[in-house]
Image 1 (cartoon, one colour):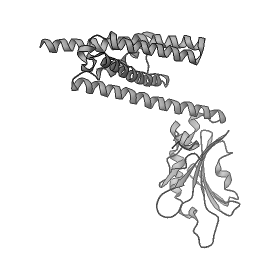
Image 2: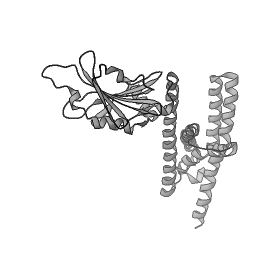
Image 3: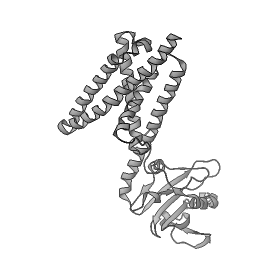
Image 4: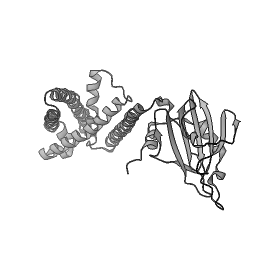
Length: 319
């Protein structure tokens, strides 16, 4: 009982000291890096970061006295140094994930004191992984993975938002006006082949399903009544209404047909265009297989696109 009691005294003391080092040294390192940046630029930041990192590793290895009895590998000087390096590196990864979440607005860290206190948490969680005992290791391991996964996901979304924000400088459309539908049945977005111009945004969908060939479909958002890919359907021979949706059929200069469905929403014109192939005797026109109900659904169910959808539409993903 005495041994068990001492163990449960050493564990909070051990993790508490690691947390304290992170809470003290990380804010100090941040301030030193800012001062070094103003004085020496990038080189100064690197030197300051190296000094703070070395100080923290040394403090972990030689300042956390309970580690010698709590973690078996730390009974030797080499073991303590290795442990300190792992705790420092793992805690820094967790800290970076938390900073990314804060910058993305997904984590409210409060004022300077609470911010400093949170700086020590990732290091304490990583240190807890070394404590003998399945329960403690599982709990701390899940916590570490959760923090890193959450921070990574939020940071990724923040980068996407920044990239989309930069793209918005080329258009007069508002961010919420970048509207996209779900792809029609059997279709997928033709990634990287869309366009965002001054007054319109359009995306192409290509058919990848089985059965008869079907035409490409272009979904476009534009201001008022101008723009969009509806201009490709010239020489309209007739049009009729389906609720708020107007449908027109026309012939392009190469003799191919096109079907254009249009509706207006909040000052925007939404257009779905299905392009047929040039007429060839004995060859069926893919436009004959188009599902008009699916085209109407694209107009009715379209909604503001996510940052990921916008980026996939405008650029091909890196392999």
